[in-house]
Structures are given as C-alpha cells and as structure tokens.
Image (cartoon, rainbow, N blue to C red; front, side, top):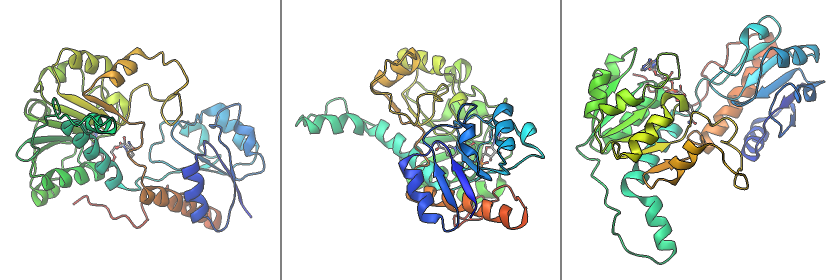
Length: 337
Ligand code: NAI
C-alpha cells in the first residue's frame, strides 16, 4: 500500500480525505512542511502539502533523499514550491479548481454582511438591543459592481451580482467576449472600474502586474462610498493605503478573506497572542471592515473535490507515472463561457 505524508492537517482535511480515500495509508501531521519536519515523510512515496507549507530546495532535497516521488498539492497555487529544484526528481501536482461557487458565494456573503451591517445587528440582538440606528445600508439593485478578473470565480460572482439586479462592469487582461455577451456585462478600462463601481470585487491572480492593483492611486479614483471585496490574494491590496483611505472616510468599507501578511496568522488560533501587526489590528477594529481568514473555499463540496482530485492525481501517477498536473476532472463544471 502506498503511503502519503500529509502536512498541515486540519480536522476538516482529515474528514474529507478519509471519506475519499480507499487505497492509501495516509499519515496526517499537524506540522507544516519545512526543513525541520520534512523527515516525517520517511517511508512515504507521496507528500500532500498546502498553501503555507515551505517547499524550497532544502526541503525538496530531504524529501527526494527519503524516496518521495510525488508532491501532491491540495490547492491551486504553487508559488510556495521551488519547481526548478523539484524538476526531474519528483512529480508536482495540484488542484487547479475545486469550487468557484464557494469563493464567489463567500465574496457575496462579505458584501451583504458589510452593506447591511449584519455583524453589528447580530451582536446587538444577542444583547437584546433591538435598535436599528446606524444600520442603514444601500440597495444593491441598480448599483454598479466592478469585477477584476473574469475567470471561473469572477464569472460566478458576476452571476450572483446579476441576480441582485446590479449593473456589472469588468476588467480582465484576457477578456472573455462570449461570457460578457451571454451574461450581459461590459469590459471597461481599470480607470472606469475604479471610478464607477459601488462594489469592487477582486478575482484575478497575484502576479507582478496585479500586485497592489488597489493602492493609493486607484483608491483616489474610487467613490468614497465604495465597498472593496478581496477573496483572491492579500497582496492585490496595499493594506497601508487601504487603512489610510478607510480612516479618512475615502472608502465605504472592505471585506477581506485574504491579507498580505496572512501567512503566520490565518488558519491558526492566535486568540491568546499579542498581535504585532498594527495594520491588521486597526483594520480588524473598524466597524466597516470584515475579515475572514482565507475561508472562502471552505465548503463541503470544495473539500470533497480537493480530496477527490488530489487522490486521483496520485492514482494516475502511481498507475502509469503520468502527471496531468491536477487537470480539472471532477464534477464541478467550468462556467467560463
Ligand atoms: P481563473 O484562472 O479561472 O481566473 C483568473 C482570471 O484573472 C483570468 O480570467 C485571467 O485572465 C485574469 N487575469 C490574469 N491576469 C490579470 C490581470 N493582470 N488583470 C486582470 N485580470 C487578470 O482563476 P479563479 O479560479 O477564478 O481564481 C481567481 C483567484 O481566486 C485565484 O488566483 C486565487 O488567488 C483566488 N482564490 C482564493 C481562494 C480563497 O479561498 N480565498 C480559493 C481559490 C482561489
């Protein structure tokens, strides 16, 4: 029986992988994969890793010497792997998509919560405070949603916005004309996105071109009532500039599932710690900011798809040595067109 060393295991991972697994012996480790923990993979021909594992050349050396032949990422991104060092020594596979709906629906949840101040209302009524003073939101119907990145998640979010009766404008480095036509949205320049959006949602990847796509300059073009939603990657937003704009009331609010310095904090319980990141502490303290800790993907369906695709990537590799690199082959259909 092939054995898998599974790093950074959380209870929800164990549950979904145990449900999908029929043929592997999986060793679950709570530790993240790094130079100090890589030896735990001794005796396993496969390693399963996640977004905050460190898979640099030192780690790959240790894994290769231990006999690891396959590195199965249970996520889409692979920016944490030294691919050059892995090349020719072990196959690297991933899950390119698992549920665009999960992320798009979470973006919508952040938007609704912020706009209608559900986070405030929830706390008030728990204390039998039934006042609705200062809870006024605005109708989404008829307002303009700006979407940057119209891939799988961006299109799913656009569908939701259209359901609310919003006017949708979008920007993508590679526009999808047929999607725009069939869904009834318009591609416009970034400048128009910034100046016309009542709600701006980010669904593009983090690349050198998109780093700080929301910064001092872009925020200065936005409506002072605009709500920004980021479920993509933290570094799409310059957090210092966001904080400054919110403090100066130049923005309406921000719903963030990702944060540029999230690596040592998100996914962990830091409630007993002193948080030394002042920007994060100030953002958390604001009434018009909602932060969730990279949980947009966290639905039963997404977890099941992640487990199924990760294990079928390994099945394929161990059966034939092939690695189609986690080609999207599960039950979720792409809604690209
Ligand atoms: P996708 O690859 O289907 O779509 C990305 C879109 O961004 C493409 O249409 C691409 O053309 C566009 N794009 C690329 N460069 C651009 C640029 N410079 N400016 C504007 N658009 C650009 O990816 P998908 O599945 O929709 O995911 C989007 C992002 O969501 C991922 O990159 C990832 O960062 C994030 N994500 C977050 C999760 C969470 O739990 N918070 C879970 C999964 C993904």
